[in-house]
Image (cartoon, rainbow, N blue to C red; front, side, top):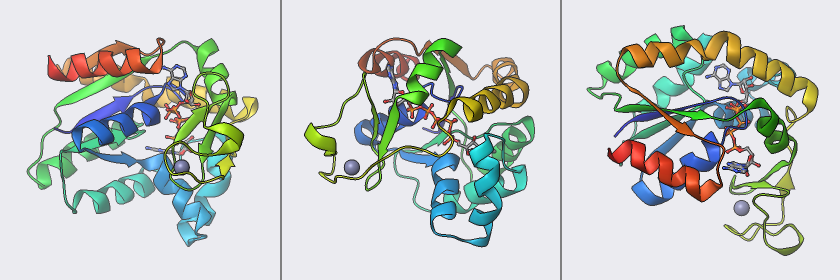
Length: 214
Ligand code: AP5
Ligand code: ZN
């Protein structure tokens, strides 16, 4: 099964993708994570995207489509979770072509609905394990004592460079302007499944499972 998790910054896409990886043997393809890896390893592409990401703007379609293309060539396991991709209509068209080229189909697009006020609270309280990528929140999902990651035991909690109010404003504007048209695009194709992303993490997990297994 191949699915897209669609939603604004902080909607919980990464959190829910990691749960699907654990429970359904799926592969998470997060373009945000791939771009951050490129930035951290100091590649030419990483240097180009670093400032764009810190400002909260979208990087070019060419770059992210290239990243996804490479990943589709490997082992497919229980299917792909596209997390944070596509984000423009051009990326959506490219994904349809890429999936067709490797004989795959898109099974569902899960839209996670969360209002702006909750997004600000989630983004400004988020931190991430620098070792395994597990995502935490200062009030809704706390790690083990003294900054120890529950998942891998490392003590390496990090905040993201774009998790401040100014970048978040730009990220939200980019979302509403360039990404939200995808809701209508996938609705018209009969692939859209909208879930309430405002409940607790376990409630959202159940809502997504219900949407995928319906
Ligand atoms: P990306 O990394 O994709 O960031 P994003 O879309 O802004 O999404 P986030 O990772 O911020 O949020 P999320 O929905 O995954 O929420 P999370 O689960 O962490 O992109 C970053 C940048 O890269 C972009 O701005 C752009 O520059 C570039 N980029 C990436 N892809 C691109 C593309 N395709 N095209 C062009 N540019 C691209 O949860 C957030 C917090 O809330 C956490 O603390 C979590 O613990 C908490 N939380 C989660 N669920 C709940 C819940 N149900 N209740 C309470 N708290 C919750
Ligand atoms: Zn960890």
